[in-house]
Length: 403
Ligand SMILES: *Cc1c(COP(=O)(O)O)cnc(C)c1O
Image (tube, rainbow, N blue to C red; front, top):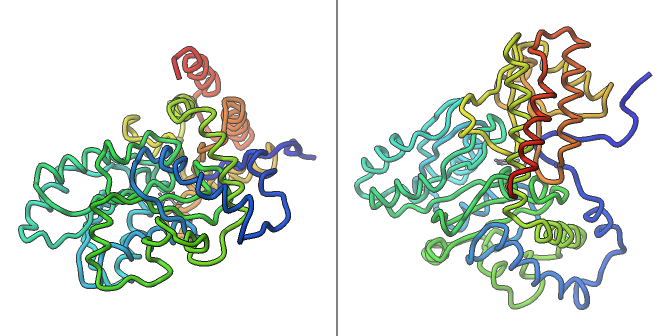
């Protein structure tokens, strides 16, 4: 017997829940890629993507996941043999550095561990020490999905400006876009990478690279960029196929159109507010549970937490046991702990994450939290009483604040 039958909630940090509108928009026969609806619709995606990223800059779209967007950002801006600075705050920071390294770029990693944000003072010291400006770019993860830390991207711009360092500021917003507040132009970001399957609520398969005029100038100085990764024609196509360097990702584009309509209807400020309130509800539950027993938020300081994903520590084997319980008994799938321990190490079973990005609302979050609380009871994991009630109080409070 199971209590899991009914609408399931995939509460992992990507792929995220897809709205019915997105699914319906994709359910259609293959469209003509030479004329008609698709051609007319695609041009209209660009201003709406810019609005979500809060930029007047350009955007190139790739048939790729986030890893492809990482690759594209570097392919257009940094040559083999050049240096980049990577302040890393989790698995994804290191992942981008690895991509750079394998492209023949020399990444200098400032490792802030798994439980802290970027220390701007250390970044500043490193930039000041780079007197001949060999560092071409700073590669920062806005929300690192493994640790759920939220980094201060505007603060990095301030450090670059204070030191007079010309490096490009690049931000990985794959987890954070349309969840955590992000202002590409106001924060002085030169390159921003995103992907379709998180806050944008579309299946995995679209990678986005937004870039500023300064980044376009860096592209112009590159000795060569491979045809596929070159963002020039993608951002300013003379022919339709140039948007995608080949056949368009037809159905993803219809899905994206529907998602951008949902985002425009709700409004980006309201979306950020919804993510904020729902994140606060999750934190309140977890803090209450953590008053007794092993559960702990990975990031202690609320001001450094992402509103898209929450990483938790609960000790082995409770993390894996709890994930299994809520999936089997309540229809909620939680995220594994990523990058916290090596798979195969028993310690690996002591972590989990809650994805709360995109198409999520109060009843989904309260339901997921109720399922987690039931799981801790069933598995006899010690925890403080009243977690769900604390979350409900946050939802009640958040509903009265202006969105
Ligand atoms: C998901 C994610 C990635 C990787 O994206 P893929 O689509 O899995 O390649 C990179 N960075 C961050 C911050 C992410 O959340």
